Image (tube, rainbow, N blue to C red):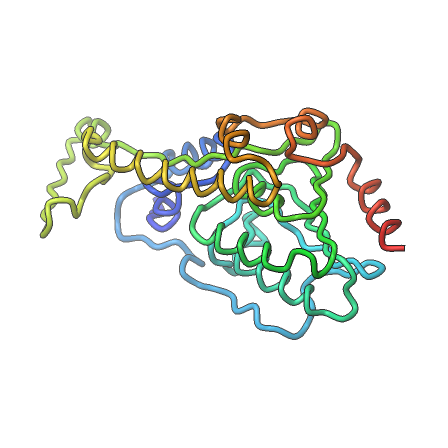
Length: 279
């Protein structure tokens, strides 16, 4: 059976800004196939250099269309297209290029994402926010725009979603996999030898001690506060109002009411509205 240690390392014990339904699905899939061994997962650690020149985005009547789709991760991989993954580095490269492209009059972030990794997300959001005011930026949500996807989408001047589309979920989650009972049942005992008493904190072979859990919670809280403050800045809302949502999601008109979107339109209608505004 194959081992997927690198995939597991991107899901368990790390902070995620992802819709819990998708996060749980990924975690369950990994839990069913993980074998702790020496195997490696093809494509992990292989990054794609997205160096300049040729456009990797489509330009429609002066609008650069940049996809923010699928599960979002820090670094792009050659397997992204097959796995429904999008790297923050690829989004950054395309967005920066579009903002400096003389043929581009506006940028459309075409969003359909449940979110993804915290690592790299807020650096990307700050980078994009720094371009506000140079060209119109619209976030057009095709279906879902949650967590890390919403963090990115919130940098836009205008956020539009369909009646049945959803956004929000301003929060952070982390998961700890405890395989100790399963290993006991299989007659497997793992001994962990460390230098530094906290070196193995949060490992999957032992139950999670309360002190370690408290530290993980503190880290999640810190990143959650960063998310709240970033979204509030981008949306022009009071921090307390965004925090009060407590990671709720909002559909269609509900999102407009809470201040997480500006209008409810089908994606094609929203794109036509952007073209009309450009003239």
